[in-house]
Image (cartoon, rainbow, N blue to C red):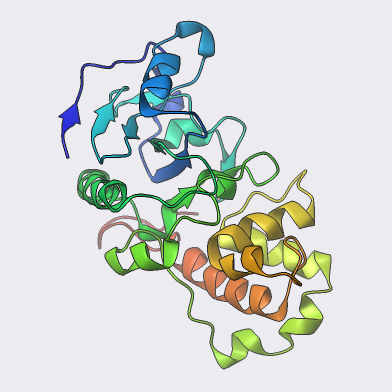
Length: 252
């Protein structure tokens, strides 16, 4: 694993209204190679970038300084706020959806995220995928990304549904309005979103077995979807209301 800071992208601007980093967004590149991504992000006409790129061999490339706003999330929302770019650090992983992430990439990603967390005090609940903040547009980092495994390192949280979470879950799965309320509590932007897109994005992260099934349909909520969604909503809404320090006021 090597670190490079000599592949700068011109595609950045200032964070809006003095916003601080509170989110880390993980992406896959869906491009042919690491070199192709570096070339595209160096092209001003592409109007895309991220703060970091992780190659197949685990090498890390910093393309935008962390204090600047990289252009990686697009139209997006998390925890009731738009302009995720102004509040986040974006990490691209060189990967074509459908192939496994390399162990070198996952090691480098873990080291990088833990370092960012230590400097910006990013909550594990606010480490998200591109599909979490833009569920109607994006699929990355995809159903092959090992969220459950990485949660052991506080990179995201993995839900552990209680008996209460499972109660009447199959019935709620058929009630879009109740589902949408739960998604909002879990941090997802709901306005203008199709319920099916929200469910699909959630399943890509928390119910990945559906994408391997020959009978289940991604986007159709199940009792398991509801139970896990309730657990995520409880974790995320609680964590994001906690003060960041004993003397700090609670976020509203």
